[in-house]
Image (cartoon, rainbow, N blue to C red):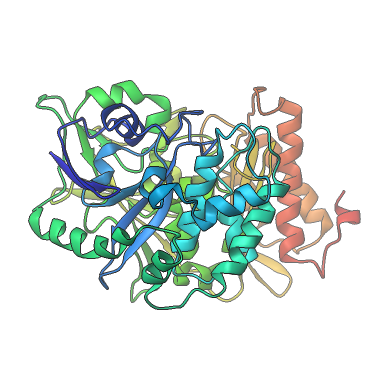
Length: 478
């Protein structure tokens, strides 16, 4: 049985853990404010807030698309729909009022998603800025109003939140009617619930079939929602030991398999190791999806254009496979893929950890992506490069590429060619030609063969221009 709070109501349900939170909210609880849109996490019309109790006793709220949130991942948490923020006597909250005032709603279908995302922004412990305000709604699409009015509404709210205190934030928000007064009681309710619950349910149903491993749901609930609902599932999103990012004494960085893309983006350690991490991660989906999607899930989905897979391939990452408490083995990420959507992994094995060597002085790293839209889109081609240079020569190189083969590619021949070569336009040109021999793109909805070959060439040039602007120029490379 699953236990959580939905708005101000305690929920106990035996609905399948692999069903979607959206369907539970609408069809079991009859809360129709949360809309059904794309069912793929793209439009944001179904956005809700998910509050999780933190070690310091506070509750951290994140926006998530409920169409891709497994119901089992609500266990032990506070789920908030638009009905859960409505003030008494039909009064608009400051978020709703700002959208009305700035003309940010026409048909109104998407409005609820914007309201919930901006309410989540108001509940954040981070300082409210123009950048954070716009980032909060980067997963919400409006089909008819246009975005300038919504941007003005966001700016208005940001100015109001500038007066938000750094402590007792929820009390202040309650006084200002951003959220109802019951929010102040949520931490103690979740603490009592945590004490009551002994474990997160590992499966749903009573089948003897091996359970489907389910993390954030952002892939499986797009690809096979009915299958996931009907089979037993093993929930790993909240499993102790599968979250977190740490650095070992030998310098290796270790990530739990359930570490999310947002955990990566906000990690002080990762930001220190990769100064441009924020710009890289802005290219990876949207805020609600980054709040849900796990690193291991991106790997195991085995998409040839998985952004995080391409990122970690260039880092020569190692994946620890096994079963919790059972046998474990380490596999290089580049050896995990044997063919299109095919893994060198036994069915019962799951990813437990991901590790890589922290970049040292003299090492350069860059990630690039091209898609039809800059943000919130699947890559046409993506690439990452790790390169160690000394005295104007390449000493070691690793290059990954996505969208140009049946699997995420590690361009071993290109990287080997670069070792020992002097950094210059001639070397770069020769490397791009070798890369063309290592790839085998196909024409599809994201581009023709010729277009993808051109994109990879341009992305490789972009890596070198990022690393060595004093040695190379765009004019001489093209």
